[in-house]
Length: 172
Image (cartoon, rainbow, N blue to C red):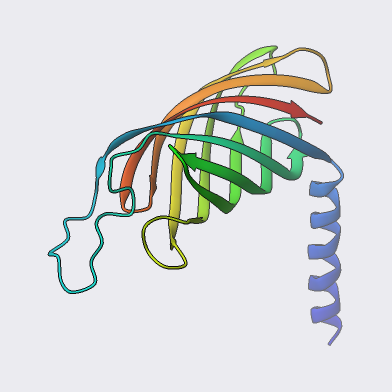
């Protein structure tokens, strides 16, 4: 029993030490999603009303990510977003990861998002699918608390490949 308490105490101390370097971070991203193609080839059957984005719509998005910044290099958070694919409204919910390898004012960044999206399209009650997003770009620190970023990458959702162009504002 003493060994279990010792291990638990060591784990708790390590976690407290790691998160003592963490601060609250808020990020707001907005941008465009360019349609890159369908990634699922469907054999139409009864009730099929077309692809989720059946007219190869481009989209706009606005996202808010709340989380923590560890040593101003690793950002982990939970995000919610609004989507508009040329009149088709939707939302996204996801976990967000962003890594800034340098502590300089201008630094590269890499990011990933994993979650779900829902759009109200031609199907009754709309369609929900997985969201996977990988991105890379640059981040510029205006001061110790505020930074801006520009990134792009690939997004897989709604059975489509989308190419995002993202502008972000981060407040630590």
